[in-house]
Image (cartoon, rainbow, N blue to C red):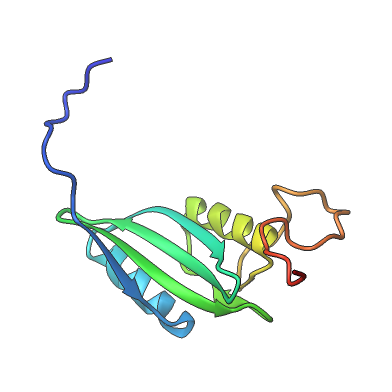
Length: 127
């Protein structure tokens, strides 16, 4: 399948460290400036849980990196009204055990309601 999109250089990628208490203001500012949320991902580094918010802007791709405490990871719902963000946040809550505060539908989507094990994508504390 041929694309009509002109080929050229990929957009530069930038990363910005953001505190959990700053994420709402930052994502609101980016959305207001026309940035498009591409996805939200999460990773357990073994020391922290990191939430990564990936935005596409006209001139670049920006990833906001939010480190969270592994013991009680918690972050505010970042995208009021964005159905895709809500789904990404539910996945992060289920798979990494992150509390998404003020999420309008904090229900299980990816794992069974009766699952009682640790979050599936969390690294084990046992060595």
